[in-house]
Length: 213
Image (tube, rainbow, N blue to C red; front, top):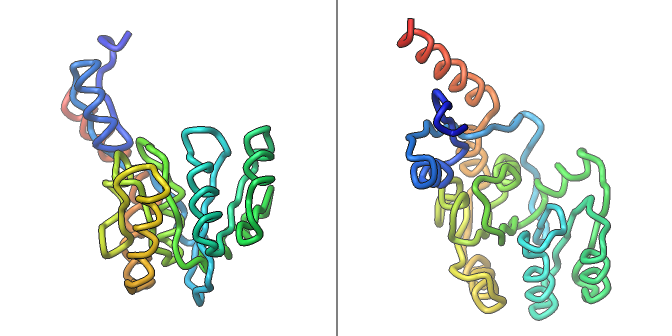
């Protein structure tokens, strides 16, 4: 079936590379977008933030183990109420606050107030760090795959090199000695606005139709 595809569009360069590897075809990279107008800047508070579904590869266990050890305040937001989430919540110390099924308005407020957003999984491309950056919040990300295409080191965030408590802890300590410009981070995130995505998709289709007419 892959041989019958006229054109591939990939959500990241990482995905495009795998399309070349497995399908032997080139792919145009068009990054997904968000509605950046829903996100805003506000005064930062003393807590970290992580958001997502509690499934193994999202590495919530790494977050809990790291913050149980360092004692720093963190808010974890999820809509997933499964066995893993209950186990991790039960082992979390009091500095780890879990929030389940909160409203979009409250989530946007947390994005805006967090001192940093954590991004520990391997993802092809994930919009949640973009939402954080659209709120002027720097990202501490695992240095692999999609994060390398969205986080600009020392400008919109920093990286850690392995999915381990030690590596993440070192990155957090480094982060706390740095300063970031929330306005510049938001300006960077605007390049991922959904209107740009729509324009790129439209232009791609228009160009292919023209070339085949």
